[in-house]
Amino acid sequence: MSRLILGIQPVREAIRAHGYGLEQVLVERGDNPKLQAIGRFATDQGIAVEERSRGDLDRMAAGGRHQGVIALAPELRLRRLEELVVEPTSIFMALDGVMDPQNFGAVIRSAVALGARAILWPEHASAPLSPATFRASAGAIEHATLCRVPSLPDALLSLASQGATAVALDAQGPTELGALDLAGPVVIVVGAEDKGVRRPVRRACHHAARLPMSGPIGSLNASVAAALALYEVLRQRQTRSLTP
Image 1 (cartoon, rainbow, N blue to C red):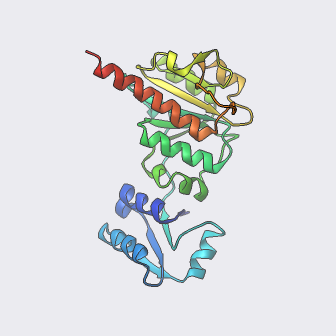
Image 2: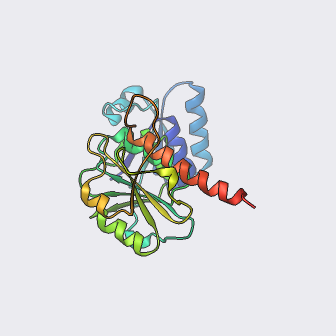
Image 3: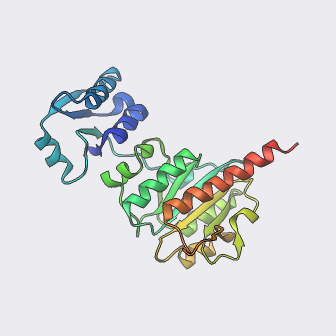
């Protein structure tokens, strides 16, 4: 069964990532320069391009915002935990109970942009890999290494056995994230906004750490927290590389 990718930027990233591996690109009939450009881009990569009416695209998108372009792609490849290799500079992002596709996709975008080696999440209690998730990632999911695991605590313990330090973000954590040594391989664990990281997952982590907050709001949305945590990892590493 084909996977639908909706929207100009997600489709553009899918073309960049997969090239002729895409099955087809459908563009709205007309003279929209942006749609014509993405059609030429797809054709240049050897992808079949077909013009369709707005109504056809609306029916295919089933309420999703397609912006006049839909790509038909193979299913995303999900990696097994055993395929993930922990190296000295590895960064992993783990999501625990993030149910909102917008947050899920936005975390994936931050993870890809900030150098995470892979994104892990449990099989249950998680947002689906849907067109809404693909769109929220603005196409970044096409470049991501994705790993859905039966048990997130077991996955964290497995990565820890290879030398990775697992850090759960917790607004009430005893330590600020910046006070931890994040120079080695690390897994940043982000929980749902309403419940946070579940207790069994937290027990599998080495640390529970909070992000510094100075305003009247006590917590951040999952995707923002993930981006700030990943940035802190990179900041520490860059600072150390510049230290004589």
